[in-house]
Amino acid sequence: MGKLLRKIEQSEPAVIVIDKFFSPSSCPNLDDEGNQEFLQSLRDTRIPIIVGLRTSDPEQLAIQSELTGSEKKALQKANLVLEPVLQFGAGGNVKYGLIRAHRDARRVPLQWAAYNERADLEAGKPPHTLPTLSQLSARAFDPTVFTEPTLKELLSENKHPFTSFLAENEIITFSAIQLVCDPSIPQPSNWEDCRPGTLGDDLFRNHVVIIGNRTGDDFYPSVIGTVPGVVLQANYVESLLDGRYLKPVNLAFALFINALLVVLIARMFYKAILSGAISPDLALAGSLLVIFFGWALVYLVALHLGYYLVIWFPGVIALVAIWAHSRAHEQLRADPENKQN
Image (cartoon, rainbow, N blue to C red; front, top):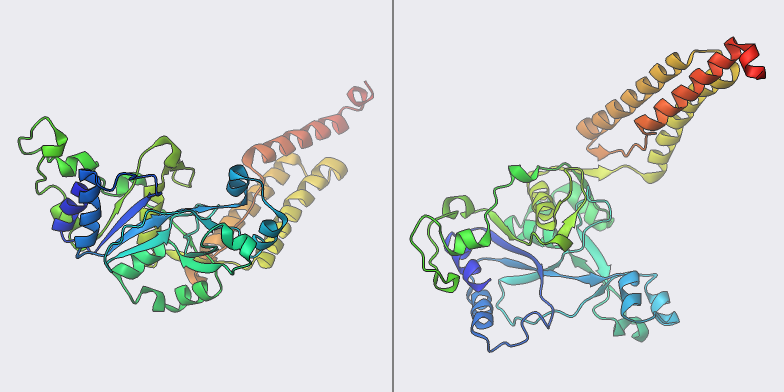
């Protein structure tokens, strides 16, 4: 990590983001040569570096030890507690941001309320609102980004905006070993003696560079498939800097719209199944038209108002099942003898 940070810093990026968490046991021997190089690279940096902080939720805390009544009561105010972190003792260019994502991966996490340590729960100490990795990264690149009215309002209301996503293949990616040991120049067999070359220099300069893992425990489901957490973080930072975010629609209004669309679909199949006033085929066509209207409404609200409206439609399989059920009822009405049998 030390060699990687020095290589990237030579490219003069605007910000370096480390989408990783370092517990006190991560580097237990601080006298180790590799650990010393890593710590020194953080102390010497001229580039803003954002390092991850991890939190535990009530379920994770309960695994560590059973929650007491006082702890449960405190967690009603804020349900996150910071995990102990390795103290780098680095300079003013190193900052720490929460790496916890929103349960809905489509939302850009901006900030979370959390306690400094578990002992604060019993002590009755108040939680603090802490910025996320994506918020700090965007601020480090452009200090004015959160003066934009929409983002300013979202922060004040503690809301997380929705965003669209770049696919993983649209994000320029390098492996760490490619940067530390440039394959375009002759290298020794031992990677520790490798020399970095110019690979990535032009692409990193004045950009945000994010370092992350591709390990099995760091993959998350999203609208672009199951991807590493670093891909989500890259999208979150990019969306904040690019203005590619949407405010969530008021929950009550979203529920009303969804209920209205469901009632319209149910009413058409009710007429087809019970009264036979319309054919099942017509009910299916009408339902598909309602779904199309919902999609169009989502698009128009996002395009013209800057809001994201979540629509929970019955799946296509459910529609087909209802349609088949309606056809069966229609055939029974048309064949009374079969109905008696």
